Length: 119
Image (tube, rainbow, N blue to C red; front, side):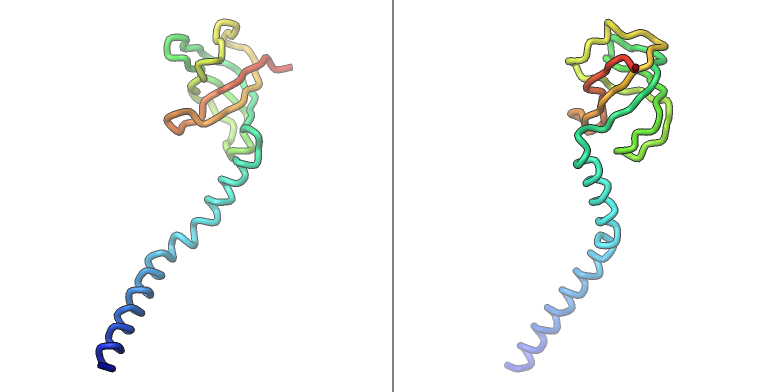
């Protein structure tokens, strides 16, 4: 009976050790991801400033050249953004300098949820 108990304990110890070794990479990388998520969660909404290059009214998208978005650790770049349905694109035109806020859309990508003319 002692040999069965010893063998069971040994198998259990090996299983625990294997699980810990398998989880080790997650322990190494999780804190950085958690910190990034915390930075975004603590800011009300990521904000940016940029210039409208093109408007796709049918697709409800804007092509914008924007400066850095600190809350997301994005450098300045030119990119297409989806725009939330509540944002009226009719008052916008290419060349306009804007301030905008971002939120995660239904697909998980960031989209513009508010726009105002830059001062």
